[in-house]
Length: 164
Image: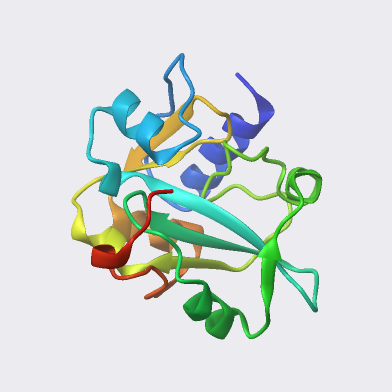
């Protein structure tokens, strides 16, 4: 098992979140791929989107349901600065995760985490567990708590959501 997955399991245990990491054997990098592998609705997939503050250089994580798109204007307001896509190397160096396996918890260096309220519309959500094919299921309220996330509204209205 990879170090990244073990780190996710340890962080979940330390936060009192019981999880079982599943290696799916095929990619779960996109919300659609993850939903197909997990046998759930795309809305039940937690997209872990990492951005970098344009002024501060600080990484920030936004957790959004798989069927929604991050509302960049809302994210900028919450972050307090302009955001840009984070460099994959910086993400790997600072979080310990590669893009496609970024988990909501288990960071080597703590970063701010913001979770969309729409995640709470489901009894169970599925999140990345530190590898491109690793996922875990969790109660969304418990996941938000374990991740130390600020619960807010950061996604676009689903009626206007674009395909991601």
